[in-house]
Length: 74
Length: 439
Image (cartoon, each protein chain N blue to C red):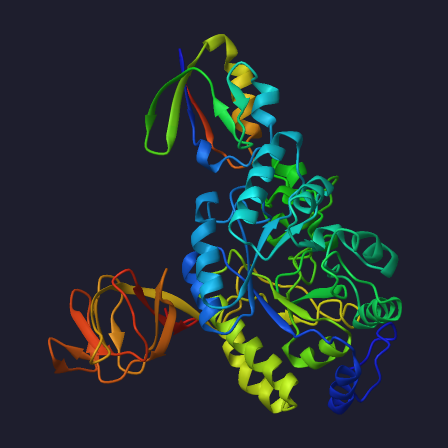
């Protein structure tokens, strides 16, 4: 499994990660992307898991994030 | 200063004309100095230095969403309590482009703004404007809408009491818009004559009033949603892709304008019909807000009491030069006369260096004790004490003492005490202002 880390508090709601990896991110009522499949929290980071087969979409979501708050650990 | 042909102002300009003109206006509104705040120390610095009103953003729906200094939604009650306790006005900025998914947050912020008696909301998106209007909030149209003529302003007068005009207008163009407002007795929903707000000081943008997509194209970071990466502020070279040769240009910072400074001709801004003087800088440090608000307060007061002179401006400029700036120009008020930053970052004559935290304050004696954790201090240094409730207290170090003994130099690790002119707090930190180059 892949580890996904997301600092939701700094999200500016551009919607890109939801477009690129809709199985992993959704928009909440505060206009912030929120990570699905959460497994924990580490300081400001919300942690989740993803399938290795989804690496392309997750990497694209991380690269597109304008405030660089998505990290994918292999 | 030379008049631009587009400006329409007579030269030499006579101050008496301003005063006469203003006295003849019916319902002449008071001039308002509008200061930025992105954090509590800046907010307090603005209040302490005589700002008439403060504007601020919350959460991600403001044009400084990326800024390190930023308020959260939950800060609104305290922000407004502080502003109203000081008898000033507070304006909430929600001036990003709004996507559908932003609307619940925008609406909840506006509802909270109404509950906290916010004095006005600065909006650009029509959805935000309509939502604010339905809630009965006073609306100010953001410069992001680039209002540049009277019919556009008149259109928005159905919803808004004030328009922040496009930064690209000349004083002559502003004056013509103002005359139309007066001639047509154009009023906003409050019944007051429509008010003109304009930028008086701070950063300029290479794009039309900030409507730039460069950052969006390069990094998916929309400047119109407060995420500008400031690509324009970087150094660029021009490369011939066939040969790889790089062209030498005089100024590699070819997209980075220097900053706006109007203090020299603030009287002419008044004459053009501007009633609110907006200082840019929600992402700037508290000492910036302290210095810029203080200087413009003195200048505007002088215009109002008839004592505004070039000599006064000369006394105010060193304070403006001391804090963050990219060099100054007159913006577009006389047509584009200004230049480019020509260098990265600030051209401030001073920079602040952290000394350490405040450890004690003796109110009766007016003496502060600071632990020197970072940088030594010497007698004669200019200091700042900065904190969320204090704002900025500044002065020159005199009668420096370490463990009660007078000293000229206090080194790292020591506890230093000295007299301060105002109350400071344990939440404050001390800095010294060091001339650039003397790090």
